[in-house]
Image (tube, rainbow, N blue to C red):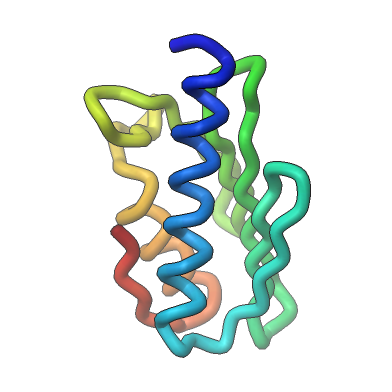
Length: 104
């Protein structure tokens, strides 16, 4: 995948995440700036999702650790665990904030 293809696919998934959280009614503050999406919860903790163009990945930083997702067969897949970004992110949000959100 070339840089422009990566940027489009990564931007699309970031917008999908943002729209799903906005539409969920959950108490999560969102900030989107320059390829970085920051989720802030009522307890003050954060999850940060960002595009890493040079690596061709989306990176997620949460209390439980850092996770890297590459685009494989139409999905963003965690290259260490095989987990899918949207389902992993739903779990991370729940674990960190107690909010039940189904993404994707």
